[in-house]
Image (tube, rainbow, N blue to C red; front, side, top):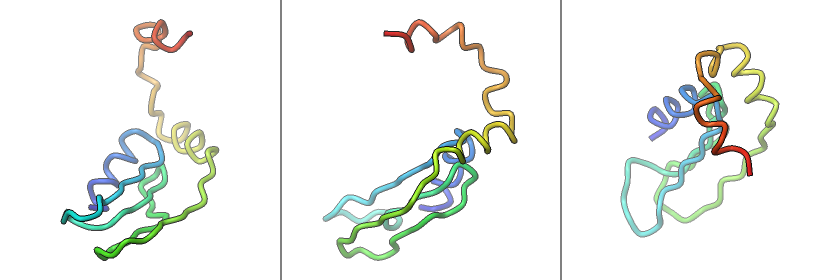
Length: 84
């Protein structure tokens, strides 16, 4: 599961949290990744547990400024949806 979560976090430059649902079997346990795809924590077994990680929202800004994510976005196309 972590390899898919890594792709999502790096593509979007955002923290990614994935939770395994209790009572069902999936590829793996829960995981938390940083905007750069770095694993912050993971649970690999099927038993019920809690995953706690510390995040720094400034990491999103640092990663996005380094990679240029968003440089080619046209905010004018979706700005009306962002304002109340």
